[in-house]
Image (cartoon, rainbow, N blue to C red):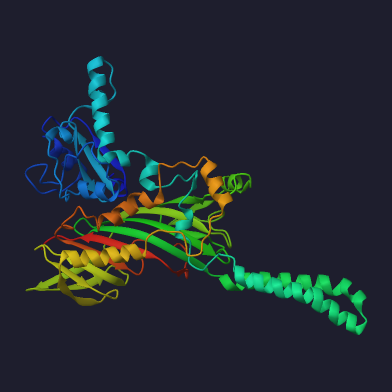
Length: 469
């Protein structure tokens, strides 16, 4: 259950008492080892209600208890109904009253139930009630954000090259061909040269398109991994964009503790019929020591995207050694670190650049503001957006505007993006003692699913915590 919550689930516990005095028993039954004599010290918070709605990043920051703003009025928070705490990507909510009061029967219970649910919906939990909103995706529906994670320079038609080749073909097969044959007195041969030249040009265009993208599998991935080194647990959310010049015969190989959700492209023409065909695609899954996603999961020369989520036991970690004002790190994440910032248990900040896997490096002391500025710049450089040169026609805009695509969820606002954005939220003045944030070359708990796949344009973030020894 804890791993399911870590992966982004919501756990609601009822009847914990007017003063939340039964929370300690709930924590013990869940196996949570939280320190503190009061529930506030153990990370539970009442949430602000109403006011200016705050999306994504602010919700996570508030649940982590590092919001610099405090409610000015007791009646403006959820204290009378529930308290909540974050648990990796998920949340735990403890209600003071029994569940029966949320399923009212009488007049008084109706009032209480309505107030409770109204408090939930007006709090930061309201954004987490709907599955599609949490994930930013509905596997059975088209997604408007599909084109925001296309692989750079792959899969797009080489328009200029095609225009050049077609122009040369028209000139050669028309006036040039006529002039040469007329000069030789062989004009009847145009019945042969025209179809032969057309076939040659077609084969040349096809070969150019194949060779320009190659036969390998290219992947662009975006992931965040949360590592709790003290508990030995890790959670990973990843969005992957595939383009296979030639689809692998064995499909994708995914660990058996990872769930994979298709992200469907938004079809520009409602009358094309392609959307209906895409929705009827059949997929085959072979389950053994790992998941083998075979037929229907990865087609040749077709942009394909998935959202994958994993929560598992993990030994991946960073080891820190403090010597006075100096801090060194040993990288045991199994992947190369491109940039690292650390907040140690004394509240001091350290930063470092490249740290190879299974190697050590010394970190340089820094401050929160410059460290956050660097992190914000790296996140901004990898923001989700349409690729350069991508053009949406007026017809496509009208088609999407008139389509029935739902508008209340977005991949750019799901739990993964909210967690990434929370790292640079202006509402925080600390990441928490014993916390590190790393930008890595690959995801330490993430599998591409294809051996030898070429990864480009990816962005991987790791947020970890370690116990004070």
